Length: 224
Figure 1 (cartoon, rainbow, N blue to C red):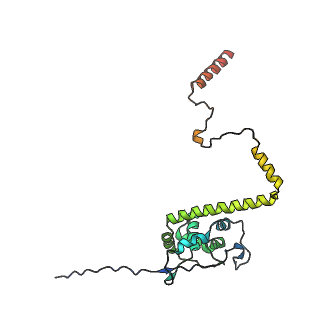
Figure 2: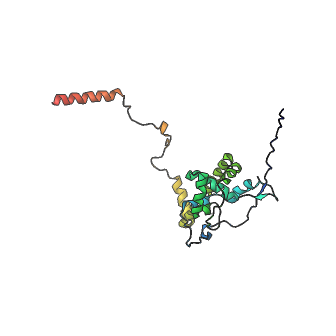
Figure 3: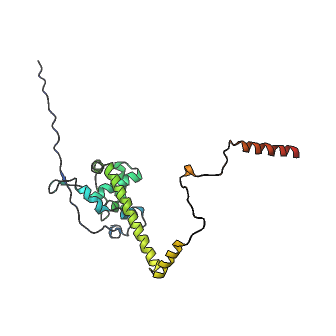
């Protein structure tokens, strides 16, 4: 006679994480330390993208997911979001992503490191937690904020350049006002949607095209 015992599976203990938000000045690529010498270039695409992202503004919602005062420290928000952005833009696997970050100082700056390091900033398995803490809805919201912030930065820089070149004189403002009231030739409405743009083009099956072809053929026959 056999006795069958039921073994109840116990749930693994829940792991708590806390988040330490670092209050520091805006990270600058000029201060990024390279042990092999040189400096990062401000023309690099990852430098430009990092300057358009409002990291501090987005970090507040990310920090609210964690416990306060106890638990293992979680990875910084910039590292989590930056890794997801790099992975999406370059189409990498989790393992290849970590290797690319290890080899590229620009990617290390993008995820918030202050100096180049030869070791991996995180294990590839951490990407699972990054995706869990930053689901698609949160990433989409981040994208919208990034676009708004980027537009504001571009507009403010354009206004500064215009003010510096214009001089801000009263005469120029008056000239612009008069010019705006002066009617310009060829004004009107432009239909941008290509599906509804009127065009004076005959359809290839138009009978008039067939008739013209017949007349030209008869003319050639008569000439021969």
